[in-house]
Amino acid sequence: MKHSAHSLQNRLLLLVLGVVVVVWMATAWLTWRDVSHELDELLDGHLAQAAAILVAQQAQEFDDDSPGVDAPSLHRYAPKVAFQIFHEDRLALRSTNAPVTPMAGNGASFRTGFETVEMAGTPWRVFATFGTEPDVRVYVGEEAASRASILWAALRSTLLPMAVALPLLALALWWAVYRSVRPMRELGDTLSQRRPDALQPLTLDGVPSEMTPMMEALNGLFGRIGKLMESERRFTADASHELRTPIAAIRAQAQVALGEHDDAMRRHALQSTLAGCDRAIHLVEQLLTLSRLEVAEVPSMLQIDLAALTRQVVGDLAPQAIARSQSLEFDGTEPSRFTGNEALLSILIRNLVDNAIRYSPPGARIRVTVTTRNQRARLLVEDSGPGLPDGDLARLGERFFRVPGSQETGSGLGWSIVRRIASVHRMELRVTRSTDFGGLSVLVESAPDSMA
Image 1: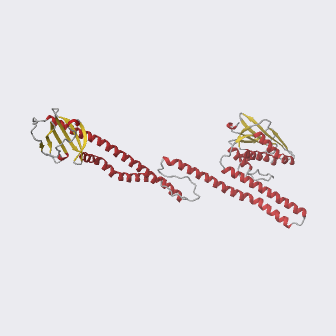
Image 2: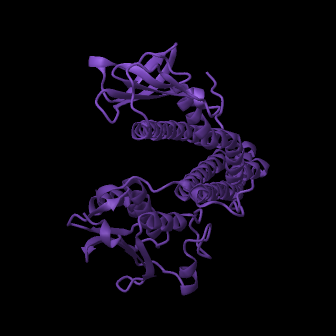
Image 3: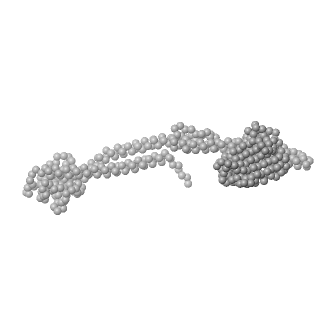
């Protein structure tokens, strides 16, 4: 099922607007409650004050036989307010809109204070109190609807501007969000317009701090991709360059074998063809190893015994040294444990010992020593071969560099692989002249914090 993409801009805008609307509604409700309460308090106070004025301004003695008097209506809002004065349970004075019966309780049911009653189908808020004498009762009432009118009039001045401002606020928020996410749109446009082989770092003006980690991650990714592509290009160039010679030699030997009638010569040509195939296979393996080392992340590291690993590699290469009448010695009786990758370290040891065997003359002496000193594992490979001049020592590790005048076959990649493996393990690699044998001396030391 395909899901539609969600716009970060729309989500952010809806979220902010939703929060604003909820806050606005909560504010309106709280304002309504507060204004309604304060208005009731105020108007109730006005009713009580009006009743007090009526009580205080009684200007005549109420006669039992005098009929009730209707007060004149002097204001257009007067019909919304009514009052009554009863003397000895008889109506003495009332407003024109007041009924002739008490607006609230009378007789035994009379009580002072506020009460909401219904008169002629209309709710009224009534305040009742005694007059200057206990037999005088004063009632002052007000239509409840007038309170609602005053309440809405007060709220309109507060909520109506807020309601009008809400669409303007939404428009302002949309503009702010649209402008804020502009760097992200620019980043998307920049990425969509880049060439597939463009791996230079991204640079955008005015990038917010929130986008900085993403920009750094993208630039780091481009850098890693660049290294990978460069490694692939180098591998292709190296492979095509180095494989050309052994393939040409194999082809030449195969042509000789095809055209040779003498069995011995044909056999010799076929053996040369097989040797060329072996050299080509060895070259491809070296190229693949170096390529993997250059593009791979840090390999898995485990606790290994360098002495045991070196003993195994030396044992595997011993027949090669015996075939050349060389003396291959190993000295590593004590375990030397540290953190490393066994497969890569095996390649490192094999390359060092193989170089010592192949580049030393027949009858040479080769010694491989594993020790532990100052909490560091040490691998030392020495030989009694011709060694190298200082200029050639400095060039060891360059791709396809081979010692001038050497008769041994090789790809010139062994030292590059050794240096790369040492770098992955943070090992120190030193190449000097052996003081004991006079040939080459190669010392590899582990990092100080890698020991078990």
